[in-house]
Length: 87
Image 1 (cartoon, rainbow, N blue to C red):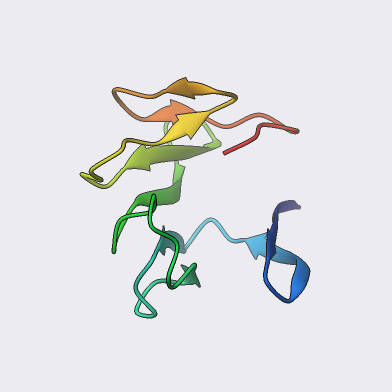
Image 2 (cartoon, rainbow, N blue to C red; image 1 turned 60 degrees about the vertical axis):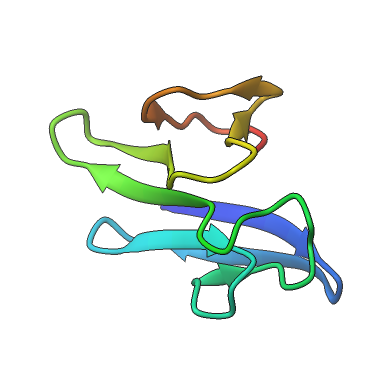
């Protein structure tokens, strides 16, 4: 079982990652995980989804203004996530 752990203004949260779902992250409340009012995050910033061919979860930038960082490095294309990665 895979989880995404993140912190927002109300504390630490844990979201189960399902193979059938994709998770959108951004400033807009329309996202699955929203950070409203956060100036460096785009309305729709990044996506996490399951990539069946690699049997792994992947992160991809959703055309954000500032780009998506994975472990401190800007990603240019979808990247397979590993346990402990920092977004």
